[in-house]
Image (tube, rainbow, N blue to C red; front, side, top):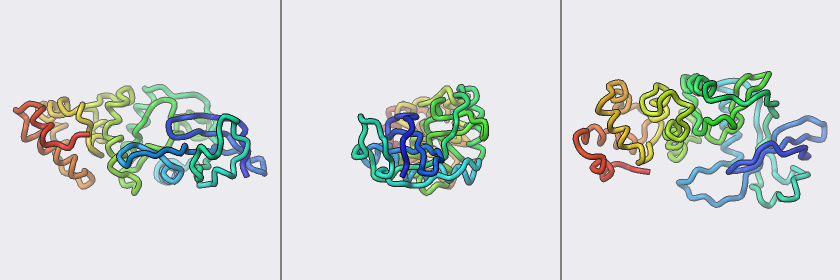
Length: 248
């Protein structure tokens, strides 16, 4: 059994609590809200985040191990919450003591280093990171942290990664032509609101054109269709591209 000591963080998909077991060892436990999501919508689960956490700990930096536990094994939840509000399966992970919260300048460097190791983060914002005395700067939310070869990286998550430079531009040197942004954009399909700008890149930036039109093995068919169509329609309006591209 695990007893809640205090609430740490509450987000879109769940709540994180500091808990301790019967031996007095402290952990962080994340409970995931019951929510019926469409297949195409971003969602998270204990199974997904435990897998992402352990993959990161294996491939990038050993920060411990996460595991699955039953939500009903957690006692002492605040009165405003109930185990019935959460999925039966919860995530148990090491408790990291936050020394400070990073700024975007530090995050830019960090996610660039992660991208060099083929690890990507779909929501690189300051409150998803901790500075720790033991491990330095690390992510503390693993819902959108994937290795490019992760079996968890379905189309909706690939697209979230591809759009991260536009959703979190402060975390990237340049959302359109930056080296790290290009790596992210190569993972999935970019939203329709960015098509005009990407078509311009294909026309005007030779380095971007080489990357965008390169048929690397990990691009989805929809992504390749966009890049091929963008090239073929360099002298047409963006509306022409809208008619034949897969647009989110």
